[in-house]
Length: 301
Image (cartoon, rainbow, N blue to C red):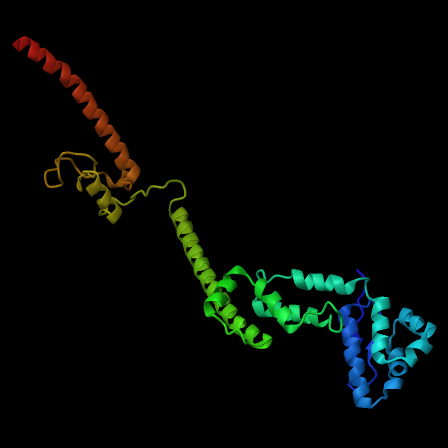
């Protein structure tokens, strides 16, 4: 990548320097501004301005270019010199390309104010050129290319039609700042929920790395958890023997409580398995009972 030219000036009344490198629209603007400041502080006459600053161009190519046509350049104005400099050393059709860049720019995910300043700076490089956008044109360009979320906020805000470009940009900046603040807040909450979920999952895996069920290693059977109680209530279970789909309650239960050493925490899968088993048993009994009823009826007949 080619080295880009930059401008240096220690103080406003010192000759500015255009360092060696490829001339860009930004460097040309900075050179123009630095030279104009120098002329003002030194009180240099218009007819002397060009020859007073040309040797601040340190690039040999630029010096040679000046020397080959110094009579013409010295006789003209500084503005004419700058036009000749840009026409000769800037990229061909640089103004058209820069204008296309300005017109195609969209806010995207950038903060509005940061993007708006960038667009204004790029448009400023076109000053004096037919491609330069007026304040009204730049206002329209910004308005139609802000992100969709900000567009809705701007429409709801019903900003006054008589705002200057500066005032409009400031109003939209306030709306976008609030939007970005809300986005950051939502992102923070989502990240905290994610971290919390990750910690819970990690804790569960540490306690029980090989099985989703919890084993009670204590010699004394612990009490039912809320989840187990709910499962037993929903699936006709007994709180004592802890079996699903039985015809008794804990007060009438004649079975002993499960062994603590082999007890596994009740899961919904256990309840569903018991339900399926009960249905099969019911169908089997019904299938046996029907022939007996038929035989009994035939005997009586």
